[in-house]
Image (cartoon, rainbow, N blue to C red; front, side, top):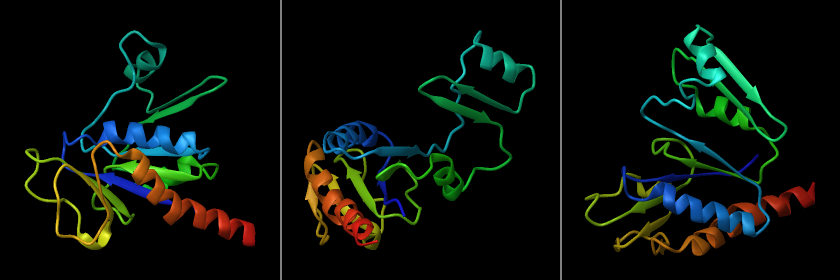
Length: 171
């Protein structure tokens, strides 16, 4: 199974900025990284005037676009897809999947916390593997500075990626 780690925290604490650094760090170590971004709001990836936008405006409920190097699917849904549906869509060819959001999801979490934006952690202590913060908490979990993507990558690599490689070699 592909390890999944959720990057969580309140809105505007810097989750995306930290994830950019973390993804780049994991990639520099040779790992293949996939991301699932959870949004509580609706979103659009089509732009007025583009063919796919025009198809949607004409009534298409699913639009796929493919090129030699990318594929995208925009599909109207009656309810939010489960995380399992999202994982199935991503496929098995990655070393790790990072999620941004899914703070109530079942995966181990790295919480981003910034003073002045939040007054408490959003995660239960048992769900956390680390805290990335400009503060200190009396929680027995590793604490990392807001810029320390390398330290978090070390933790993820040791805890999830090296263990997976050892397991795969044993098979």
